[in-house]
Image (cartoon, rainbow, N blue to C red; front, side, top):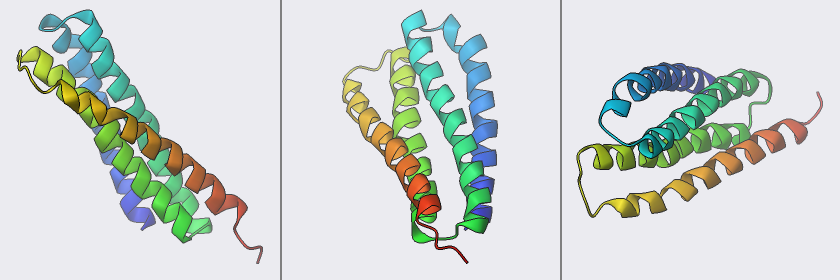
Length: 131
């Protein structure tokens, strides 16, 4: 499982850099600054949690338990729900698509997944039995 988290972290990190560049150079030409900031928030949290996945992959080697695995899954889920919903909102704004504002309701669930992931990672380390 640690290889999966390491690969996911690296892939999501690379994607965050690419999306960040797009947001800084391309998106700002077609949407208001407020929408660019929303998009960049998604990029920022994606990058943070890409690093968290790399950390989880490394820690899983030493603290291999159910909670570490759940933490990694929650980080991936959080990126999809939190960052993904912000990217969709920016895309809908860029294409002037109406009626999809409710995608913003998904964002807090991604935030909760991030928080739960960090708590699970903490618990996986502090509950590890000494050998």
